[in-house]
Length: 336
Image (cartoon, rainbow, N blue to C red):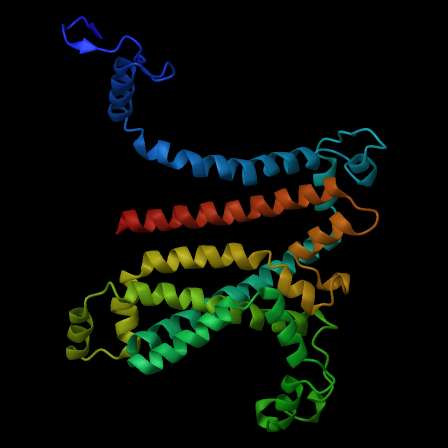
């Protein structure tokens, strides 16, 4: 035993502490720096930001690089050198009539899918808010089953239901009276040999898979509205339609704006449902932007550079829609 500087007994063999530990003064300075600049939220987001950078940003940079190259199978296997072509891929895409046809199909299909999904989801959400406990549990279970069904499985089931060889859809339409559009002409009708019936079926699949998310979001928003507002509107003589547009919709406007934007992003370049319904690559006049991009990348000869340019054009279109819609929403909110 020896005496320390303070005069207290101590062990001469006791370690002085781990050498890698930061000095207390440095820790105090670092803590003050973080608090002064309010860096705690950014430090907490740093791990997720690193994962996003690894899984999204870096592949995006690679796709951007490929879009300026003549990148195909020889460049992929290393048998040919990389050829930089500048904006030639973008020029080729914009001068391709098939691109404009696929863009038109994407716009028209999204114009049908997005409103139908929002309307059906909103109606189901309003229904859930009014049902009793048992019936609400039943409707919620059915919605969750539709939501949990993979897009591939749902698309295959809908194709099976609409098959011209004894499908339920053709049988049901053939049994309808003529004044409702039914008749024997629906027997053996093919839903995949033309763009209009194929995308009608694809719209049904997209709505079936997408309405539960809308319904749950609307239901969550309705739970935040005080019941006294609805009671006051009923006392003033407002009907369901008036109450929705004068009370429910104004209060849930931010939720509907986000749901609309997400639906546009999801439905504009829908791939899985259309790919299965048209029979993989099917006929080229049935391609939307997602199928056209896939066919460009993987049909022989594969053109990964051209497909990368298509991917960036699709991204730019969605960015323009997103920025324009967000700016309009913010401006509308500022005016109010």
